[in-house]
Length: 329
Image 1 (cartoon, rainbow, N blue to C red):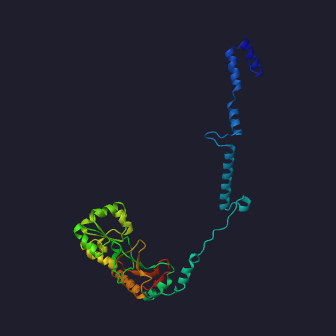
Image 2 (cartoon, rainbow, N blue to C red):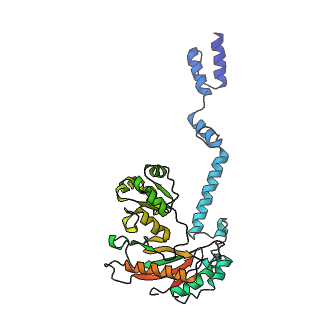
Image 3 (cartoon, rainbow, N blue to C red):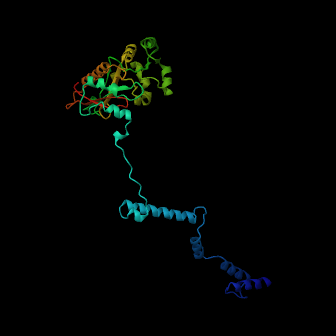
């Protein structure tokens, strides 16, 4: 009975409605319920004192999140013109400075550009005289020819692709690979081929070892190169009958490539880009190469083109200013 008396005393302190008529278990249950906080008390307590438990954020983190949200809201209001930046407490930085393209050019480029009259259209010979003087780089820069055509490359007959033999070459050492049967290897090597092979050459392609500028193949072996189109195609190295790189006369093709035979083709923007020499060439050599290319492009005009075929011609050196050239010179 002493235990019941103790429980009744404890219940009395908690102001519970129990008496001696209640059993010990009933009194214990009443005391236990009185000691447990209610759901409302628990919720209220959590709201007053947030703690950093798993799945919850601390009071500091909650405050920072609220401040960040308010800041973003102020920025949006400023951007929409609803609030003045000074009133919103948002610092507005200076507008970005965009320099003119001419201002970003090097001193060497600007000096070279002064040699060119941008209001004039030059002949090929005149351009060839000026171009070597406009090169501001410290290496033997290439002389480039860019020809804008009035064609639609999406049309099969207007997707121009051909070859031309430059009378003075490109000035570049061309590495040539030959993929041919064993009985043609010796002749290809004598003609000047740098790489000659058959199955061993395919092993190089498997490793994507591309250390050549031109690839020549015999027709009977072309089927084996099909699987390497993804490697050779993007580099413009896939042999093609139009470019003369698919031929049974590999030795002859090697000699032509070494002598300066190059391929030209129109890109997606209907422009042909081709190097026609180096700044170290004599002006007359540059002019002859450029005129040879322009004639080859003119000869490749598709019959379906009705408007102006050669629309614009420019010449430039590597990283140098461009010169407008007459389309009829």
